[in-house]
Amino acid sequence: MAISAKYVHSSLSVRVLAGGVKRYARLPYDVRIVECTINQSGDDIAKCVADFAPDVVGISTYIWNAGKLPDLLRSLRRTIPGAVFVLGGPEASYNADYWRRNGADFVLCGEGEYSFPMFLDSLAEGEPPARTEFDPLRINEPIDPYDDAYLDALNGRIAYIETSRGCPFQCAFCLSGGSDVRFFPMESSKKQLLKLSKSGATTIKLVDRTFNCDAKRAYELFEYIIGLTTDCRFHFEVAADLFDERTLSLLSLAPPGLIQFEAGVQSFFEPALKASSRQTNLQRVEQNIKAILRGRNIHVHVDLIAGLPYETLPDFQDSFDRAYALGAHTLQLGFLKLLHGSGLRDQAKDLGIRYCAEPPYEIQSSPWLSAGDLRTLKQAENALRHTYNKGRFLSTLEYVLSVSGMRPFSLFLTIGRAAPNHGTDLAEYAESIYDICAELPGVDRHELRDKMICDWLGMVMGKNTPNFLKREGRSRMPEIARRILGRSIARGEAAVLSSGTGVFVDSLGRDRVTGLYRLHFVELSHI
Image 1 (cartoon, one colour):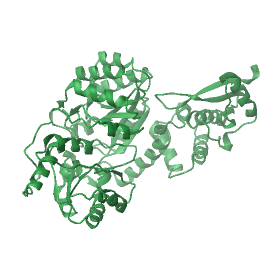
Image 2: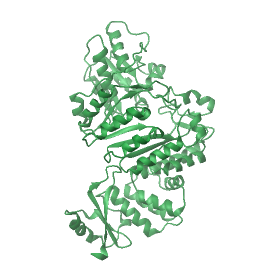
Image 3: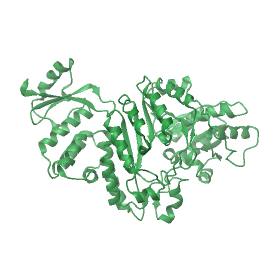
Image 4: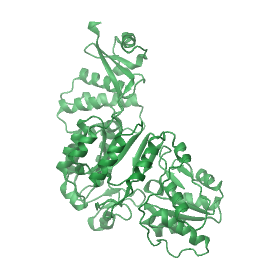
């Protein structure tokens, strides 16, 4: 059973486990897959499972579903008395005693597509295992879970694929580091990628921890994907400093929107990286991310982690501003999580790092970041998440930064403090941002309004423009747009700027990389 964060995610793990039972188990089993989400109640999930009257229930555990599982296990025991409950996955494997006390009969360690069928055989033969880690089998030929039923079920959801396992690095905040990387056979990886490219999935995420750690192999797979005819997007987790010139040249040829990169920079503060055993050439990171972005064909997501050892609030602000200057499409400000099994969790007491006892084990304070500092970071993160990272008010932010002299972190903190967005209506939020920015030094209210009008049209095509952004004269724009586009547009898809220039949005002209709609500008004085 899988319990995902959202319905749009399809679980790879449970299908690989089902394939592992078919390949490695000595005895035959009737395996059924149940996929639920954390938004469902425990009773609803228990009923979904109980409908199959299972003898054994296996659950994949991660930090996003761990908080729900103790209550769910109690519901399952009431609903399916006599069933055996077995947990696996990173959240259970490194915290087995806790889960045995909270409803699990067994916790499996090791590679699940092998340990799970071995467990089932032991149970069926009347010899329940006294231990939960079976003799390891290094999986070098992956299970292919992509049968017709799975491909049909994707129907616009996110699909996942693994073409390698392990990571050569040893970052102390991660569970994947320090293991030998096993690269699955190239031809089977290509075959699976081809199947998924034709499946109707919106996005195909490669779960390889550092996809480009082998430059030659990464180049071959990039080249193969670029050659596919598909509307899917392919998402990769990469180390930006490992790209070579040959690969950068190839990537510049990718069709717009085909490829997405998530590059974990984590910090630009060298002592924090060193304390976290993070090996990164920061100069190369900057050079390569900027080179990729110059092509305007690849969506780039950059990660930062607040709370790493030795990085104070001023240090992190510097890291943030340096990362923001890269111009990535998304800049995620995440917070250190002290995961079971990670090096930093083992060192947390000695380092003086306090963290929440419940998943996701987020940092609460450290000798370098107080609880107040973390609240400050949360305020800036709130504004970042609801503006820049959603593609909202981008030219507005650029304009304000250029004329006010503010640093990026300071601007997001200012917005986050004055307009915390907790379910606020978007038009209301836009008005708050206007009011905040209009008071900043160097900002011209007319220019600010014009930037916000253009941003509004480009990001939320079709929604009525907030009253404070409307100007006289826009009633002419739908007819002008009809003559230019050859089709009608709604009144809310056009506006007039303070200069008298008309602007309207092309609802069929969405940028595949940024997701923003194309704007047309018309000099009304010439018409």
